[in-house]
Image (tube, one colour):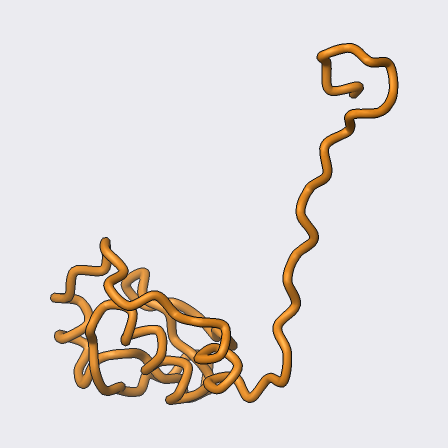
Length: 97
């Protein structure tokens, strides 16, 4: 997602699709606009009052990778490589650092 800033600790995105997808996690529909440093951005909720009144502490509809790809126009999502344990080495129980 292309985040351009936050207002009242709520993200402002570069596209309507991203804002509405973010809002869908919290059962918030629609979007409204804000201007940050001369750039128009999009925030979830039909009005700013809608989003600030919403309960943003519980995700009720988790975003799927496919939804994220559709919203961002991406053809793939990079999955971070898991941290590997360092089982080789001294054989001790320490971290080795």
